[in-house]
Length: 203
Image (tube, rainbow, N blue to C red; front, side, top):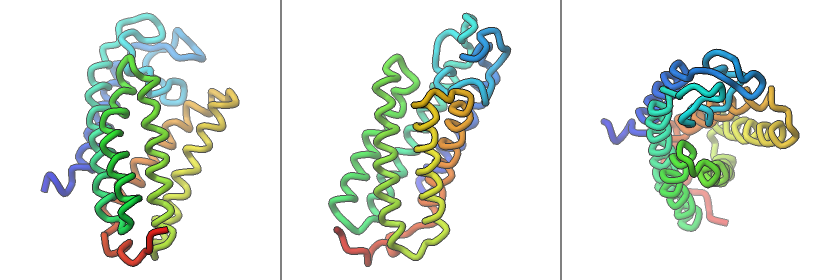
């Protein structure tokens, strides 16, 4: 039972710990260094991983955020490994498996001083989701086709907003792409089967 629902358990546990971390965050954001608490529309998730909050106070929520990210990384890693077993193309299946293994490490690094290295996980996740989307588009899973495209668009919207300095929207869009990605992962994990892909010929 635990193995079957490992991805869901990891992601739910991750959210719980990150929410606890947010409640424990002392305060401070880029728009207002003197703000109180964690603002979901004013702070990036990465603020939760710092030993000191932006307002200079010790961040007591950091340990909860690190634990939450550990569960998040394991959940995504298991997801990509599981999807690699459903994809009928050996080449792409191996790519998904390696992305899963790598993401267990790189996603967690986001919560450490090696944050900038951990950001590689976003690229790996995008490659993985794009690969899965390419296969999903060849199936009859129409709702998941729509969900895949919407999820990828939220990533690109965030990159656009962040890249061009629209920070107010970037704070919000970060949460949107994370939530949409997690929902898609759960949908793909539990509503796809090997049989959905077995007849798709490898390119």
